[in-house]
Amino acid sequence: MVPLVVRRYVQATQASGVAREGGDGQLSDEVLGAVLAVVRPDRPRGTGASWEAIVRRHGAERVEDACGRALEAEAVNVGLIDRMLTRGLEDQPTTPAPTVATASRFVRDSGDFSVRRPSSAPPAAPPQPEPNPGRSRSPRSSRRCCGA
Image (cartoon, rainbow, N blue to C red; front, side):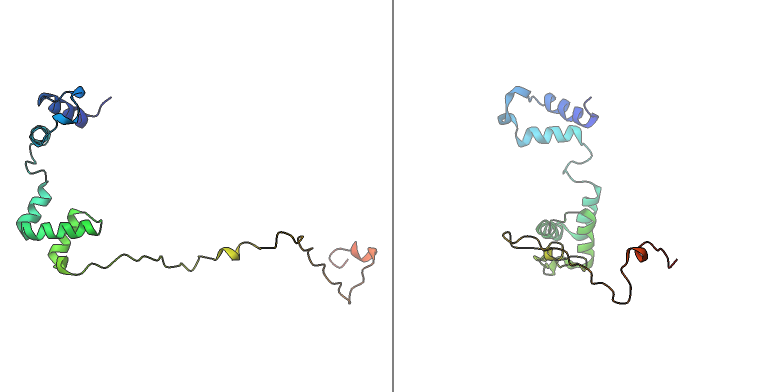
């Protein structure tokens, strides 16, 4: 099932004379404008009420500059641009994003997790525990448990 929004765009496009088999050559600014006028009549300029309010409050030139700056930072958001303009930050220099990630205190070097041995040497035998000179190692004493 085709969503309602898609269906409206398809119907408006077909009503403006665009055929599916016609290719991209039949699309023009006039055709796209006619489709948008049918599908979104409440947005004649293509923007919503929030953008219109920001332009009225701060002026079109300042909003354009702030939008360009937001695009440079890859942070396009109506609320962010409004805060930037309200605080007067559109003239401040942008801080570059850090290029090197800072290490966390939990990050460990790969050498901490692996033991590297030369490939030609056989693995070392585990060390044998040394006998405790104070205890007897007779079979009888090894059968005892908990000092019994």
